[in-house]
Length: 373
Ligand SMILES: NC(=O)c1ccc[n+]([C@@H]2O[C@H](COP(=O)([O-])OP(=O)(O)OC[C@H]3O[C@@H](n4cnc5c(N)ncnc54)[C@H](O)[C@@H]3O)[C@@H](O)[C@H]2O)c1
Ligand SMILES: [Zn+2]
Ligand SMILES: [Zn+2]
Image (cartoon, rainbow, N blue to C red; front, side, top):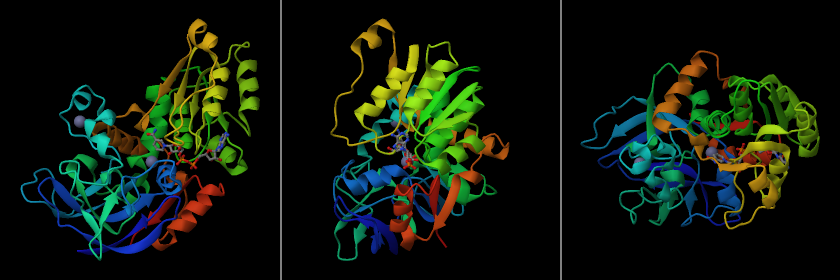
């Protein structure tokens, strides 16, 4: 069928909306009419080339929700009209990682930037109108009016949940919240620094507050971000890490923060080095933000690493398992324990997507969200 989606045709580049041909769903696939899609920074890494796609055009978007319009033949578990949130990480349910409660590390993740069907790597579900293959971001492409996905990427939810808010559970919320609760293992009374208050960092603030941290210290150069952090659970907010580091030491008898979570939009090694200096002995730096994928090397003190037993912990989707944690977080939203409503600071039409990303770069949004008709 014919649909429309936002693609990048080269990197560096900008998203532009084009007509697309979309396959009918095969066995194990769903066709979904999109309701809403968050504008996560990771799709901007595709546009800048920090995160290279395997082919162009590439249709972006990996944080979305919608309504099932068609179910592939012989595909039990879903029916037309079901409401789904996409997981940006597919979960096969069978690999070593899925079977050990680490579904975020599912082996299907190897295909996130390939754009092709995970079970048929030379086959694409989207094409341009003249027949060129179009890659799908994370196998889902939520920047399209309709998409076709593998059921490994879809989590069925109750129909009364607002799709324009719960779309954020597909990436930003689980990633940020889990970065604090799972990866930093924040405990009651802790002092936690969160560097970078966008759609991910604000949820690390919520997670750290929820886990009972005494000092939740938000760092962002943008005043609006610091205000938002204070509304959503931060106890202190600073414009740069040096001030946050000094404050954390002042409230811990000079020892430093228990953990520092790096959720900056474009992470560089120096940011991890700053976080590393700010944590106490046996403390943890959680690196959730992404930067240029070709970059290697971290400016950290080898002496502090060994003698102070400091830990640097990477975090993918906040070490959450999408099939269970998205549903838990939907329940916490119902219970008022996770705030989604105040995270959406602007909404856009699909045609305004490039403006949405310009606003993200200008620091105007916690999360911009595309609403489909
Ligand atoms: N690991 C994962 O599973 C995962 C999932 C989603 C997103 N990400 C990555 O997380 C990062 C954050 O994504 P986002 O959507 O929240 O981005 P965003 O652009 O909305 O937010 C980033 C924030 O960092 C701030 N910032 C920039 N430089 C800073 C500095 N030196 N110190 C403190 N703050 C600074 C910006 O002002 C902005 O508020 C991106 O790199 C994204 O690709 C990772
Ligand atoms: Zn994301
Ligand atoms: Zn798996």
